Amino acid sequence: MIEYKGKELKGDFPPLVLIPTTAGTGSEVTRYFVFTNTATDEKLLFKGDSLLPKIAIVDYTYTISAPESITMATGMDALCHAVESFTCRKANPLTDIYCLDAVKRIFKYLPRACKDGTDKEARENMSIAAFEAGVAINGSPTTIIHGMSRPIGACFHVPHGISNAMLAVECLKAVSEGCYEKFAALGLAIGAANKSDDAKTGAEKFIAALEGLTLELKVPTLREYGLDLEKFAALEEKMAGDSVASGSPANCWKVLSKEEQIGIYDLLRKK
Image (cartoon, rainbow, N blue to C red; front, top):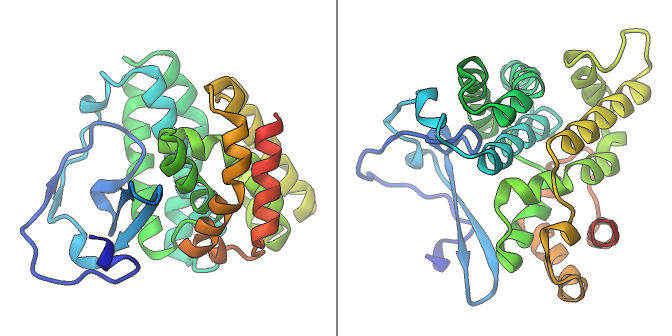
């Protein structure tokens, strides 16, 4: 598997029929998969149109039994997909449509799905949002959050959606000045910003709303999650290097250096 790292996978593979039981990863409609090289504690991303499923059965009733912790983690993963795709250098009018709708649904329905897993309206809307965000990242991929999140998952085995949620606010603060207008549009979409706001203010209001959502959903800090903070500090340089090597952070309009990404890891560790 490691020999295929970074390569576009092509071939006549057996047909895939995928049925998601969570509302988050969008794996049922994406051209990506990830696995961990345990020898190097590195998460490797693989891609290729040949990896797309022949059929995706998206039925929200299969998500109702998901516990609150998984509902939150996978829902935040979907939100990161949508926000990153919308603010990516490769965004286009079609992916923007999917992303804006996904973000609106998630802000409205994720807290409800976490509070009451039997809320069918919330579960259905979360399944739709995860699907939309998954479709979007095929054309406009993830950026800084995913780049910095995968190394945390590989080194510390933190669930992917949790590490995304831990990073989301600080990562987006750091890159937002590269495209204030797109972040402001997200603020307008969720009702956090006003049309009279300038782009920078609108962007700040969106990020503030995102921070409020993470607090409402009780996203843990690294300390609260129980990570070894000394080990985390020792691995920050490696993790930042792995993040840069993944290529995801380069999809931002403002590209953060390795040192700037280490700075974000520092902020997380000190919370």
